[in-house]
Length: 465
Ligand code: BGP
Image 1 (cartoon, rainbow, N blue to C red):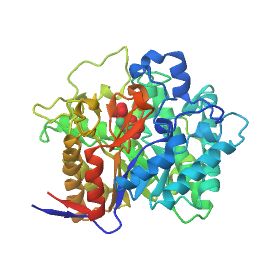
Image 2: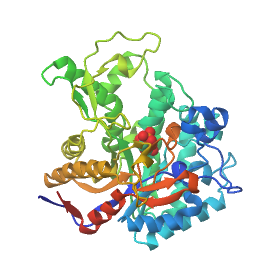
Image 3: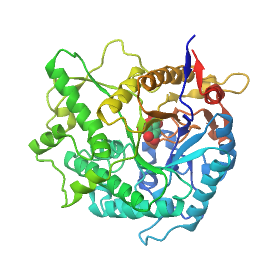
């Protein structure tokens, strides 16, 4: 048995987002975001046709939920403000019901000893902005800056940890490269412009936050996928893996922490004539307004090999013109979600941040295991016995612990997610929570075995294994 003891005041908790949990009730004044709109057009694109309005209904159940968070050992919890709830239409008028809701939700958390971490953008573009191009349109950057400033002014006294974006690469990939999310484009020029505007908007929000002289910290949350070459001794594989890393990780990590985009990425985009439109003064804004703290979401690595398959001219240009994904034989998979499980990836990321990103304050802001049809693991006691999730989290935490021992500046661990929630087109297909939600019984909550286990870990600030 080894004792895994974590540093004092380590953040134990979980993450969620407004659009995935709040739900909608009549007359709450929320405007539509792209998912509300898309669902209304094409409900069949969502698993079991469950709508983004039918989430875990935190909007009405948050008091009960905060008690469950306490029972599962949370000392901190991340959610996001919904832009389309706070500013429901083009008039720019603030929805007072949204202000009241967020105030009382955050107060409830604080009162119960759970620090709220608040993120501003979690894939949920208000429809009135999407109609004018969303992140493609520079005006959205300005609108976002206003939205961020309003949030800081409204809630900046009580919220001490802010994040500008969650996984900004996802709107790029899902909306503009691979057609997973609305507006379902495959257009690399658009993808680059969208990513650039997100990175710029993040710097502008950081600038606004710091100018208000509030006492908290502001950062960004990035999903990092360490890219491993098929063969470390094959320079072509190594080069391909480095490019994949530049496209999917450093594209946001470098500007966020170092204030500049990776040279390798700029060169490739220049070669393809795909550089984004940049205005005078932007570079300085990005350079001068880097993050105070970095949130790291880790689910799976990338395995990369040099390009072997022909470039698909019908789709090109695409990042995949430069490398192939490699299905490494024998890799461990999450059989339910189809993602590779590679625990050491979390250590490699933390060591990379220690060595190459100034050992900035960071934490694991998401990590977790999605399981399809999880209700089959309910036992006679009515509880889901998710020992696979306990094992998953334990194995990752061991590597987080090792990285901290070796000097990584990791301040906490948040699992995705607190209670099973609605997830984009997958809706309730993959369950991730410490707490289950029974949709057939008005969202009835039951703590899973992993939730009880996590409480012990949090109480002891570690575990024996
Ligand atoms: C992360 C997102 C979350 C959540 C999670 C699980 O990338 O930040 O919002 O969706 O992934 O994803 P899925 O439900 O698709 O398995």
